Length: 528
Image (cartoon, rainbow, N blue to C red; front, side):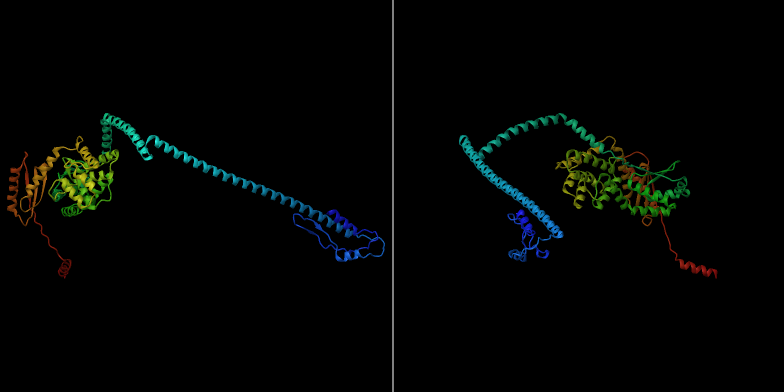
């Protein structure tokens, strides 16, 4: 193709009798590249004027003169044509190669798809054959055994259960034998660990509370002139004050509530510094009025120590009374804290309901602090807890902790064990203190049984009794007779040896109020 194009191009410049072409008569009409895959070529065609000139023979003229500039342009055009033809051939070869690659990939994918379809068909066919073979085998087994599938399953399960039951029974017997041989050892370990948890740092004050004075001068203020302050304090609080050479003051009384009121009042007096009979009486009355706050604080402290929260405030106050209550010489607060810790430790070991055990042990003796109702402490405690809608499981534990009823749960047994472990340990309880408290209470009750008596306080283990009477109900002569009558009755009902001194105090106080403005007017008149 290119050679023909070159020959045509050279013929235009040949000098063999042809007409001389001028530069303006040579026109390149078309120089195009066909992008078709089968017809990529460069076409050169002369203009019509050139064709016409070539058709008409010109007269013979001298040889043409070739312009060097035109020849250079023609060569450049030829080079460009060759380059374009080469690029076209390269593009054509690349396209052919890509088409060939796509054809091969298409053939591969078609073949792969056919292979997969064939494999799926074969797989389905084999699965159907397996199902058919399985069905025939089941039918053959059923015919041979005379059992259907469900009956065979039941037979197999019963056989397995029989074998397993024998194995389990054997293992259970072995475990029981092992536990029986080790039960005492395990019980000792569990109980010793639980008792270790019951160790408390709570110190119970039985009959004496101690206060340390900041300096020696305060002791003189407490005694007062001729002992009037200490006598006023003992009279107002119903306790006995003991002083010695040290800076410690001991407050002695069998009634822990009185002793606590006296202790708090004395601390307030020491802090205030103004110690006189009137101030003493005011602070004692104020402390008695604040007794609810004292009980609430003590109840909160006990609840926090055993890990109990969010219970009614009135129940917390009742728990606060534990500090001032003794049972067979054992302080009820200390006993409760010990019992809770022991029972909770056992509950963790036995996977029981820890919260039920904790609350049941905390409330198990709450009936002992209810003094205004008749009944056993168990019945009183159950009624109180039902009033505050405590859970039935806790109430049952409280009702059963003395084995008055059969145990209804493991938690009830653990509450009983915690109570028994705390009360039965050596040194926890002693009858002497309990008898002492009963004797002191009996003395005061005998003295209070007489009309006109407002308050009674027993001192010195019952050997001295102070009786305060209402001055409007008992005159001086009657007070003398009253002291003798109380002494006679104590002598009749006394079940102990020793002398008892009865002191009856009748005190009449009168007060008048003077208006300040009248005093000022009279003073002005006197000055005038």
